[in-house]
Image 1 (tube, rainbow, N blue to C red):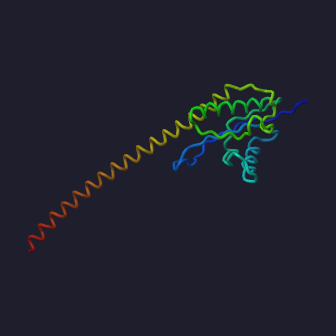
Image 2: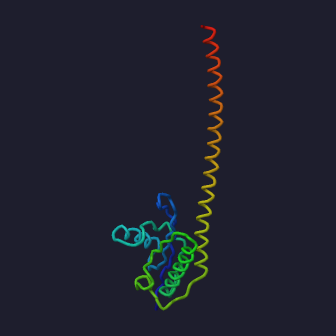
Image 3: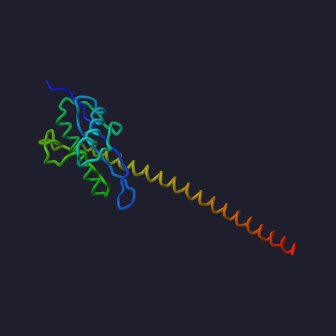
Length: 182
């Protein structure tokens, strides 16, 4: 009898310095565990700091976006990994910076069922939508920050104008007072 395993996907967007500017990089990991996906992702994050990996230590338990239990977990995990790879390929082709927490297809450690080639289009669409929403939220935040900055600049310009008027008025009054004294 096959045992149930918990399959999961973790997703995160992190700021990275690129050519002197801050940019976002999307990181995605799919996998399965017989225990809790939260504990597995905590271990994943800890493992990064213990070993040297090609991925970052950013993804952790708080980044889980998909969890589901399956009996045929290796096949389902492979479908999730294939779907994450497909989403990564699509997003890379659109110019997004994507880091997948998986070794290459040829590496057996990242392919629990290499004979499975299926891709779940719902997972691919979910991930692409997640990236789209992230950048939309980021753009909205930038727009709000820009509006706040423009409002603050307008207030400063107005204050500077008032201060200049007061300074000119004071200078005229001081000159008149000096003329009377002289």
